[in-house]
Image (cartoon, rainbow, N blue to C red; front, top):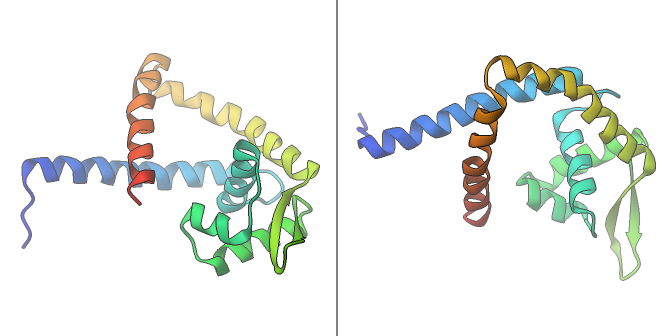
Length: 149
């Protein structure tokens, strides 16, 4: 039997809570996503809108820490929906570039609008000031985890 130090137990509890919150929030959000979007598909659209730039399927797979096959499947579903296109790389005929379409940008905005009422319900659990107090620490943890992949 492994025994954790009090500090390790605290960190385990933190990550356990984050994991449970992630699962519960993903299910809640996916229920309201329009266009039959999954969390993975919405996440790609959101990523492309937020970070713009030149994204290949391989670069997206690395950013999301999923296999190239998993990312290819997600991207194909977005192509089918008309939310992205895969354009050939002029410098390398084997490579592709992911291009967000206007329909994809609109789908992301529609999803955010649909999330508004569901997110507003959180004020029953946490006050706006409590939410504001949580964000800096969570952002700091996210940045650290991202740097230390």
